[in-house]
Amino acid sequence: MASDKQFGAKLVISAIGVAAIALNKWYPDFFKLDPISAAFLVVAILPWFNGVIKAVKFPFLEIELQEAKEKAERALEVAEDAKGAAAGAETRTRIAESLAGHGVTGLQVPPGSEAASLPSAPADLVKEYNRIRETYKSGALRTDLMEQIVAKMVKAAKEDEGFEVDRRLNDSDKGWRLFAYAFLIARPDFDRFPLLVKSSFGFIGLEADKNQPFGEYWSIRAMQAVAATRGTREVDEKTRRILVTHYQQIRPGTDRHYEMKRLLNMLGIQASL
Image 1 (cartoon, one colour):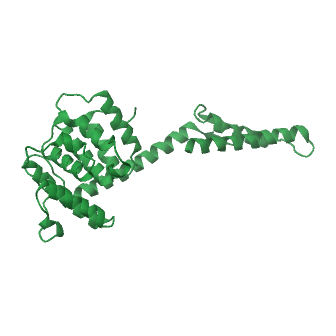
Image 2: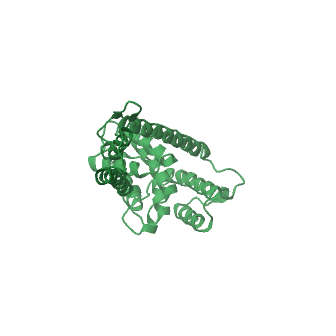
Image 3: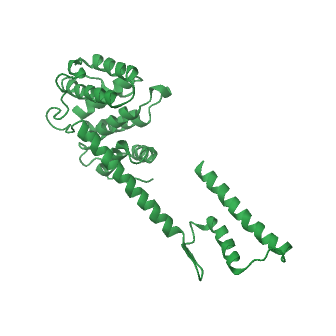
């Protein structure tokens, strides 16, 4: 869509330039083309060459094209990276990160909170998660409660060796997929990395059943936990392409974009196809 608008703008600019030349040709007495006007006609056709021409110089004016564009894009990228890093750090601080090794340090449920009395059985946690998603308005309170449920899911997963993680990664219920992500945070297994990526970014089913930003965020955190166990193993090409494609689709400046960039760096994957 953006490229169509840019193409249309180029046509309009060039049409004005052609019209000016025609008027000068047909009515030279009324429409005189002085050197300055001629220079601006040159400028009118430059949009077609902004990927080829680096700069155009006149005695009174120098127009930087490709270099200026690249600098602007780089500045925007740096700003978005900084915003994403801030968002990611804020999220990690809020949920008191540290999901490695023994226990779930930093993700304890605060005493006296509504989530302190949450059930601990996987099915009950999934049910409560879905209830909160459906009954609470989007906002800080709902996010806080859902994050506390994730903490309990991770704890429950450490005690559930028989959990059918492969089946639940493909479950149409977002709550069960979230528990599967919690399970892989608690029990990371790199052999399941391709299936985990597919569960998050390539889920096949109803649009309403696909991951929302919250579930997607935790799937990325699960990928990071799993990636940390890969050793010398490589990610297959199909999975690499899914990761890069999705990274490019996530809005820059968000915690998910920041965490995806961290994941790609962990895996040694370039953020472009």
